[in-house]
Amino acid sequence: MSITTEIANPPHLKRVLGRWDLVLLFVVAVFNLNVVPSIAANGGVTIWLWIISILLFFWPQGIAVIELSHRYPGEGGVYLWAKEEFGDFNGFLSGWCYWTNQMLYVPPVMLYFVGVSVYVLGPGHEWLAENKAFALVTSLALLALITALNIAGLGVGKWINNVGAIGTGIAAAVLVGLGIMIWMRFGAHLSAADFRMPADYRSVLNSFGVICFGLVGLELASVMGDEIRDPSRTMPGAVAWGGVISGVLYIATTLTLLVAVGKNDISILQGIVQAVGHMAQRVGVAGITIPFALMLCFAIAGIGSAWTGGAARIPFVAGLDSYMPSWMGKIHPKYATPHAALIVQFVVSAVLVVINFAGGIHVQETFQRLLSLAVVLQLVPFLYMFAALVKFGWMNDASGRYGRGTLFAAGLCGFITTCAGIALVFFPAQQITSVFWYEAWMIGMTVFAIALAAFFFFVYGRRKATNTRVRVGAVL
Image (cartoon, rainbow, N blue to C red):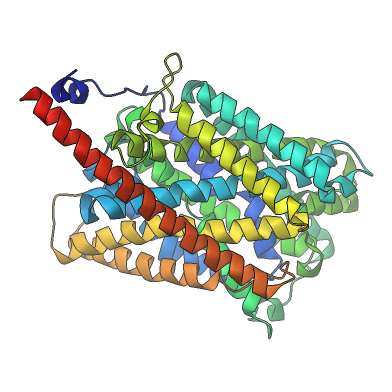
C-alpha cells in the first residue's frame, strides 16, 4: 500500500455529539462535585479564590477553546493546537500531560465514588469508605465498566455523560436548596472572619491549584473534534452555556457546604452526602439521603466516563502521528472507537490505585496525592493554549474569532494564573501526613512524566522519520 493511499484513507470516527450533548458534557466534565469538599475544607476564603479563578482562568479558557477550535477544528484538541503553534514536541508534551493526568485523575474520581456509594447501602456502612479492600475492588470495578462502555462508542458512552450531567445538576440543586432552607431557619456557620486568609495559609494555597483544576474541561469536546456535528456552529454556544452553569454551581455548592457543615467537619470523600444528610435531618426530610447518594453516584460515574473517553483521543492521534506505538492509533473494527488507548488507560490507572494502597496510605491521603499530581499535569496544556492566544494578539493575527486586544489579555491572564496554580499545588493539603514524601512524590512523578514523554517522542519520532523515508521510496 502506498503512502498516498494511507493518507487518503485515515481511520474515521463518527459524528454523534450535538449542541446539548456538548453542554451536558461540559457540565459533567467541568463541574466536578468531588473537588468541592477538599476546597471548602479551607473555609470561606476559597470563595474569593473561586471568583479570581473564574475571572482570570475560566474566562480566558473559554476564549482559548473557541478561538483554537475555530482555527484547528480536527481531532486532538490540546495536542493539535500546541503542535500547530509550537511544533511537534510541544504538541506531544501537551497531549501527553493531558492524557497522563487523566490516568491520575480518574482513580480519585473512583475513590470519591466509593465514599458516596457507602451511603446508598444505608446507615451504619460509612466505615466502608476507609476500608482499603472495599475501596480497591469498587474503584477497579467502576473503572472497568466505564472503559467497556466507552469502547462500545460515544453513541453509548455519551449517555453515561448525559445521565451524569443530569445527576450532577439534580444533586447540586438539592444541596443548594437544603442550604438555603438551613440558612433561612437556623442561620449560617459563616462569619466575616471566615472569608479572611487564615494564619496557616499553606493548605489554602494548595486549594488554588485544585480550583483551577476544577475549572478545566471546556477543551474536552475539542479533543473529540471529529465527533461533533457542525462544530463551528455548535462549539461557541455550548462553551458559553456550559461555562456559566458550571461556575455558578461551584460557588453555590462551596458556600452551601460551609453553611451546612463548617470547614472543620468536612470530609473530602463524603462531604457532599455528609452535608445533605446533616441538613435533611435538621429540616425533617432525612429519607432523601439514600436517593441523593444514588443520584450522586450516577454523577460521579459520568465524570469518570467523560474524562476517560475524551482523554483517550490524545494517544489515538499520537499513534496516528507515529509518536507512540502505531497500534494506539487503531480503531475498533465494530465500534469505531480508540479501544487500544482506552485499554492502556484502564491498566495504568488500575496499577496506580493498587500501588498507592499497597504503600499503606489512607484512602483520603491517596485521593489528595493523586489529585495534586493530576493538577500539575492537567494545567501544562493550558500553558500552551494561553501562550497561543498571546502569540495571536502579539502578531495581530486577524484570522480568528476575536480581536487582538481580547486575545492578548485573555492569554496573558490565563498564562500567569496557570503558572500560579501549578506552583501553589506543591504546598501540601491538610490531609497530607508527611510533607517530605508528598514533595518527593510530586517532584519525582512530574519529572518522570515529562522524561517519559521525551522518550516516546524521540524514540518514535526517529521511527516516524525512517518509516516516512521508506514509504516515499516505495512510491518513487
